[in-house]
Length: 604
Image (cartoon, rainbow, N blue to C red; front, side):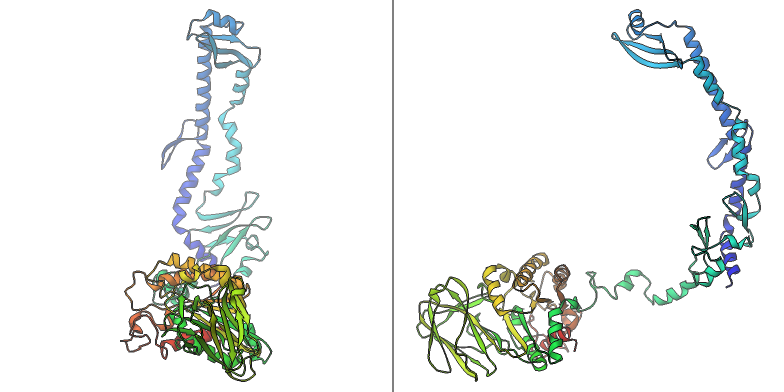
């Protein structure tokens, strides 16, 4: 379409208003130039011309003045308010002469002996001034009629272009034909409308004033692009249908991860290791049974990271246990600790790093754990204030630790004489009732060290309830650069998403106290097969919001497993869940979790 044709097309859009515009202009002419006895018929009824309105106003003023004169003729004025008040009965009216040359009399009413002002009458001088301003209506309106020049605009054209001097410089006819001085139409850059159109702005033209400011835009129809836009919408007709392809029912992006950019320490340290540069990455996994059982996903993640980037030691070895068949152990094997004798414990209530502890008053009761040749240091985590224990390496000489001599609370004790070869460490009760938490097995080698801090059956509420200062002290000693926290399965039947979010917020805040620069990944499990009153999706929404608020990375396992539990239940073709309805199978669903975490941490 040419530039002229674009303007003509716009003129065609105005054709429907042509007759109305012409009729309105004629009525305007009659309203301004009609005589003093004419009324103009409008949609709202008859409206007097300007001349008739002026004459009517003048007649009203004359009648008022006559009425004033009649009233004044019947009552003589008093010289003072006091004189008038004394001579006038209650509720009676009187007037007083005024010293103001614009006021002839001031009116008052006697209200129980008080003179209440009731108006003023103008003097002859004031009336004369007013009458002088009531000039002939035709003379008053003549400049208006001349300025408007309605006759000039009563044409058969659809629209006119008027410049600052009130001169017509262009018109649009009823046939959509344009007759215009093209030099008068420019865009904000001073280009003519043809140059403006050549810039690909849908044939729009801009009318500007003398200073270059845009007064109006002509055209602007997007009809030329509408077919392309409609085609891009696809087969879904409504905006909601199109948005639903990228947002879930909670308004969250349909993607299993968010905020991966917050894994800064993790990415930086792993990249250094990939480049054979010296550094360590320490990761703490916090959660319930999904984390507690190393075979589900934590062992696979740790093994893959250590294989690719090197091992910096076994990390945390938890002595606590839910029962003799469910010890915490380390990230490689839950049964990595051997228990001899009678040991009791407290589970999911301790302030130890994995909120579990054991204790015994049986002299000689012991624990045994085997370290590798890479181990360079081992720290014992225990409670101060009670009991005495001893330890030895590979059946060697015992070394005594008097816990009763240490302050109550979290104690981290560096064990001496760590051998340079693989060996077993044995810890035994000497006296009292010592409370033991676990050990941190470390290496100075470059690579990754992982702490499995899962407590089976626990929920976020229990982690948030333990003594903050003591728990934070223990985690600080483990020195993680990154936290991976997953709760939800045990929270779901216990309380709602709002409470869950608050408990998780507390846990995040405590992790930040241990290391403000540490990365935090918040994971939500997929829906399970239990009869739940609140879907896991509601908890996912709450955790997603928390991740955004606290600047944490977020992962929703639902996307990795399927749209609903029926797709991955033990009885389905994709049997990724255990028959217990609440746990993923290690060799299937567990591998899905490990893959998701590894891809997020490494993007490999």
